[in-house]
Amino acid sequence: MTNLRNLLVLLALASTAACATSTQLYSPGPSTLGAEPVTDFDRYVESVKAYVETNLVPVEGFDRGQQVLWNLPYRLAPAAGCESGDSTGILLVHGLSDSPFVFRDLARYLADRCIEVRTLLLQGHGTRPGDMVTASAKVWRTQVRNHFVALSRDVDRAFIGGFSLGGALATGYALGEAGPRPAGLVAVAPAWQLNGLRDYLWLAPIADVFGDFVEKEPELNPVKYESFSFNAGSQIGDVISAAQSRINQQESIDIPLFLAATEADSVINLNYLVTQFRERFTNSGNAMMIFRDTREPWPDTQADDRIRFLNSYLPDSNILEFSHQSLLIAPDNELYGLGAPLQRCLEPNNISLEDCRQLSKKDLWFSAWHDTERPVFTSRLTYNPWFDDLAQAIGSFIQANESTKAP
Image (cartoon, rainbow, N blue to C red; front, side, top):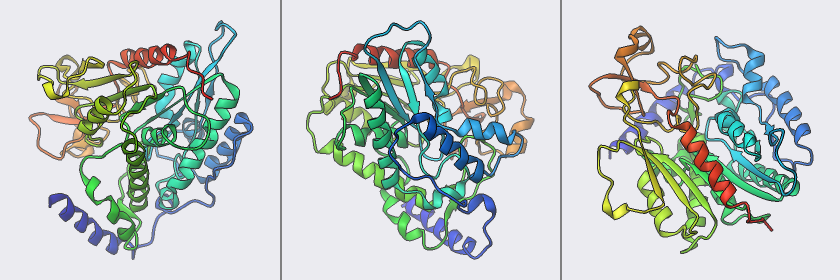
């Protein structure tokens, strides 16, 4: 009942906030992204750039022009020196409130291994939280389909992948949407089922009449929103329902799958992911990577030789556990990596931003998000110390399934 009580409190707050004048940050911009067919990727990027330049409300402390570039979709061609012949590509779909920036490190790794990488910008993202108020899951699905169709035209083997919301969108397409079939699915912390308020997502459309936002947070991150709209909850509920329906319709799913998650994830329900991986995704080439505190035993009831564990308790680095957002970020990432602008005090737990910034290096620890007291001060971990292992595993999975050609 605690989750329901919290949601009702949020509804009451939202009804009061609805009477106030919205700032530019929390109001929809003058235009929105559509879901047109992709006939020329470079032209698509130019159109998105014009959209972002028009709609972006910049975050303080970062150059506006750089913020535009960080939020744009991109294509990375295979590195120079790659052999000619049959080509491989992957479409990567970002998460809720996120942007294609989240894949920059993985994209560089895969391109260096002769895999073309494409990303897209989902409607409502990359500009201002207010643009999420009118975003649509139907448009997101059409965007994913159009981009995968375009990739499939240009390469011999096309894979699809995604992070969080993008993982659920990629799953929904891979398991049922009309169009070319992917040669494999890469899902990193996919939103197949949520923790927390998952049982109350159906209330989001009702709550939307009382106001636009569940919470309006200070926006400190130039490539990801911190504020969360009721409509965002409604649309991700739609996507999760569709992905679960696709999964549940099939007792045995043969598509090759690479799955990754962190046990401490405050967003995604890991038990659901592991159960579906073990019981429904039957391809012998499937693999799963879980970041967890390996001091604790893994339940025998969830044992599977295809699951690899990497330790997430790294006290020498002041890391208690890995966060949802950290998985795809390399330690040298320009925004989230060690010593980068967003590495310290992004979403601190039970401590103010100002007090967090006053802590010495030895006194600040890193973890997932927890609304509970901890024995040490923590903020959200923003990078993955095991990034190279994850990227290598994804690259190996793709290369192992390159003999599969999408029809």
